[in-house]
Length: 224
Ligand SMILES: C[S@@+](CC[C@H](N)C(=O)[O-])C[C@H]1O[C@@H](n2cnc3c(N)ncnc32)[C@H](O)[C@@H]1O
Image (cartoon, rainbow, N blue to C red; front, side, top):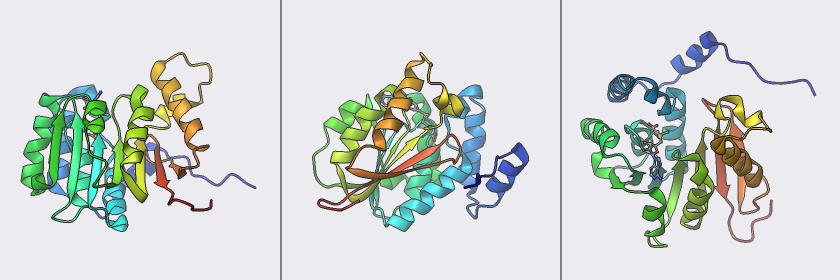
C-alpha cells in the first residue's frame, strides 16, 4: 500500500489552522497573553486541536469532563465551550499564577460557571473524587511521567463510550528515539505501547499538533 499522508510545511500547517470555523476573540486574546510568557507558551495546545476538542465534546454530547494540566486555560476554554450551559469541567493544575490568567478569560467567555479549578497535585485531586457521577471526557496534558497514573484514575471514572485524550504523544518526534534516556520520552513511549494492548479501550493516534491519542472506553462485554 502506498504511503498516504501529507507532510506539513509551515505554510500548509497555516492553511490547516486557517480552515477551522472557530473564531473566538476571547481564545485569540488568551493565546496572545500566553505568548507573553515566552517559551512557556509552547505548552498551550494548538488552535486546530482546540477546535477539534470543542467539536468532539459536542459530538459526544459530553456533559462532564476532566482536564489534567490547565496552564493558562486555553484547552479548558475549548472543552468548556463544547459542554452544555449546565456542563461541568474539573480542571487540575498546581499553578495558581498560570491558572489565574485562565480564570480571567473564562469569565470573559461566559463559561466560568462550568469550571471547577482544583489546585494541587492532580493525582490527589483525582483519587479524592467519588466514583459517581461518571465523566464523559478526560484530557491529559500535565507531567508526562504520570500520564499512565492519570489514565487509570480517569478511566475508572469514565462512562462506557467516554473518551480519554492524551496530548503530546508524538513528543516532537522524539517518540521514535528508542535509545532515549529522557524520562518523559520513555514514559510516553511506554504509554503509547501499552494503550494499543489495553482491551478496556479502543484507541487511535491523530497526528494533530504534537500528537493526540483518543481512547474510547469499551462497554462491558463489548467485542473488539
Ligand atoms: C502542558 S501544560 C498544560 C497546557 C494546557 N492544557 C493548555 O492548553 O494551555 C501542563 C500543566 O500541567 C501542570 N502540572 C504539572 N504537574 C502537575 C501535577 N502533578 N498536577 C497538576 N498539574 C500539574 C503545570 O502546572 C502546567 O500548567
